[in-house]
Length: 418
Image (cartoon, rainbow, N blue to C red; front, side, top):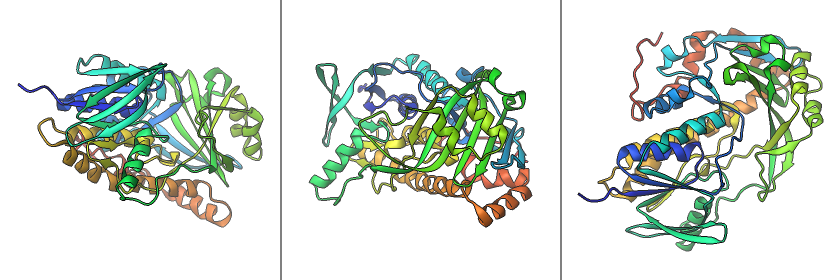
């Protein structure tokens, strides 16, 4: 019996860990290389929509989130300046409608659940503190080199999956290869400025009023800004994300996703908002900020035996909360397309072809959603009027294209779609 093919993965974020599980289930040996020395509990809350939770359920990861993830019972949409409730959508039928749960979780809790899953699989190894510094690909294999402190190590595999985020070394190297072969005139350059800033904070539940601890998602809309908050970890903390239209320079040599922010900076952006929103923002003792970045859709995600996924392939603005979900979809598609006995390069090309159109659509929809959230004047009045007219059935139907699990990626079954 021939040895199982060997997949290399750059990056141990949510996408990389999920891809390792999917490829191992498909019959691959998997080696993950992560530049960080440890998988730290970074980030804040994220929304695990049904299109992603169905995949996590199939992988056996979802039960590991019991006790930490929360299924919201409602979505409340309010107007920022006066707190008026524009719409309340019950989410109690979400799982029955879409066939998988809609969950809220801390990013670190999901990453921990994925990590626990890979440690149980002998086909998967994880090398922490290994920064990818070299990549060469040929007809028969892929060779990478990593640096761990002063030590450099070479690794060979049958394919490489670039799950190394927005500042992807793998994407940069593929750009160089295409330029060398005359395939493209310009690489996918990272922007030097952003037009929007996001702030995140975790607030102790005992610091906020009881209504804000309820298992609900809350969305506040205002001109040039919006606010999202919901409880996490059994209601012990409240996750708060504030986003505003504000230009900012981007220093790609720094950790742009966790830069500390002065509390006054956030409060000033929301100084004219309703008292309940201002009180919640003031309750946060520490804020982290990051500039919002989205690249134009990439024309190609693959080069021979190398493929991109997640933020390396299609970085998402957060307005549909689909960054992690789309990376999980990528992982499932890789597992479905990359078969041990099939030729690697055509399988990776098929993966990219199967995913690119949907990822591009979600990118565009996320961008449009942000524009709608931040409307002002008469346009905001029309938006609010339409929100008041929206009912539960219309809301579910509006998001069917996004949230309904894909049967080609999951053991998808809906018992009752009403």
